[in-house]
Structure formats: C-alpha cells, structure tokens
Image 1 (spheres, helix red, strand yellow):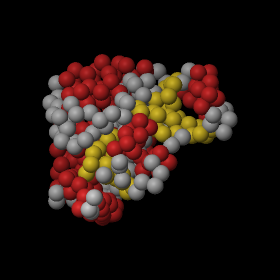
Image 2 (cartoon, rainbow, N blue to C red; image 1 turned 45 degrees about the vertical axis):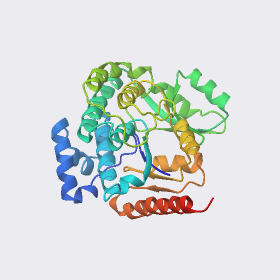
Image 3 (cartoon, one colour; image 1 turned 135 degrees about the vertical axis):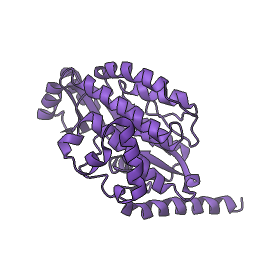
Image 4 (cartoon, rainbow, N blue to C red; image 1 turned 60 degrees about the horizontal axis):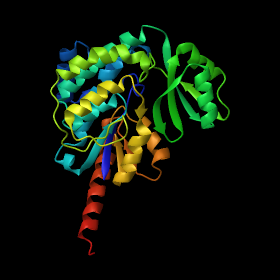
Length: 317
C-alpha cells in the first residue's frame, strides 16, 4: 500500500513553483486560487526570495497549492485508485484534505490562507520561534526545554523533535544544546502548534465551520494522534485545533507501519517527510516529487506496488 504525504511549513524554497507553472493548465488553476485569496501565488512561487516566502501568510497557501497541483499530476489517468491513503504534516494536512476529498481544492487553499494570516498575526504578538532537536538523551532534552520555557511542537519520529517558544529561549538552546543533541533553528516566524497560536484558533474556527467538508474518499490520518479519520467535518475541526497543539507525525508513521505501508510518495515541495521516513520507517521505498521530472519515478512506484499486490492476491493459498 502506497501512501501520499504532504509536507509542512519550512519546506518551501525560492522558485519552487516555477517548473510546475510551465503547464498552462496549472498556471490557470494557480491563477484562480490567487484571485480567490488575494495573493499572487505564481509570483511568490517563482520570483520571491527566501525571506519573503518565510512569511507565514504566504508560505502556507504556496505549499498547499504546490501539493495540490503535484497530486493532480500524480493521480491522473486513474492512478488515484492505486493510492492506499494520504496524510499531511502540519499545514500539509490541508493538502491532504484536498487530495482525499474532504475539502474542495479552492476551499483548501482559501482556508489555509486564512490560517496563514491568523498565525502570522498571532506570531507578531511577541517574538517566538522554533528549532529542530536531533538526538540527545530525552531526559536531558526535556530538562533543557523546561529551563528555557520551550515545549515540543512537532514529534517527528526518527530521533527528531521540533521545539517552540520564546525566541530568546530558542537562541539559548541553540547556543548550549543538550549533551549529544544538535539544535537547528528553523526559518519560521513563530511558535506554531503551541499556546502562542491560541488567537489564531479563535479566528480560523468560524471560517472552517462555514467551509463545506465531505467525508474522505481516501483513507486519511490525523496529526492529532496518528489515527485514521473517516468523518470529514471532524478532520477539519482537528486541523483547526492543531494550530495550537503539537503535531504527532511519529504516531502517523506508526499507523503507516501498522497498516502495512509499502511505499511513500511525498508531494512538492518535497524532501522533509521522505527524510523522516528513512529513519522512522526504515527500508520503505520512497519518492520525493520536487519537480515534474520526479513524476515518472513516483508513478513507477505506484504501478509496481499495485502489480505486486495483485500478484500476491492471485497466489494460491
């Protein structure tokens, strides 16, 4: 069973939308989304520099738009039937919701744009940030976090935790990492998935409640606890609450393993989740789709997995 995964904030890089926009149909679709949200996604995805697209209000709809156009290309020509499920990391859940049919794609982009604006405003209330912590003794890491007023925000598995809190606390942790741990400050604008984002939850909740949600047509797993969710409205509600609560990607990967996942395909802007899978789901084949040039390898993985599953089903008991 192949799962399609969608990355979160921080995966964007300057110009990452450019190769996708060479297709006129994609340009038209991205243009329609841009008009719907009042943001020129094509411009920011091709011309803007790293500091500009670090802005939460821009990064989030850009990432979701890229994931949705990648999924369209990947799942065309009947290949949707070859996918065993979908999940997204943090803002990538909006991409996953669009792919699974929980949200119409335009609604997914519009809702995530509202999320991005609300989170950017919440982040501006006081200086906060995030950092990845790799390795280290868990007790020593926990003690260091408490000392600097920080909390885990993303439980990513594979020995990686993203922590968040006051910017001076992140700086102090990076200056003096816990023993045997590496601390990598992240290019984000605030302490996402923590109490600092509570004002954003209050703003996004009524927008989400007014957005139509359908039950998923593909299996979809939530960051809240890694469980599969079959109710579309509940999935959207969980995405809203996730704004101020930790992401449990480690639990999602555990659910993948329990479900018998045999391959992972990461949508653009890809790379981070395939990297986590190499550590958390060792030996599982994976493909990161960064540009259209990566589509053939992803399609081959889908088709090969389907053929293998068919052969196993036909084998005598």
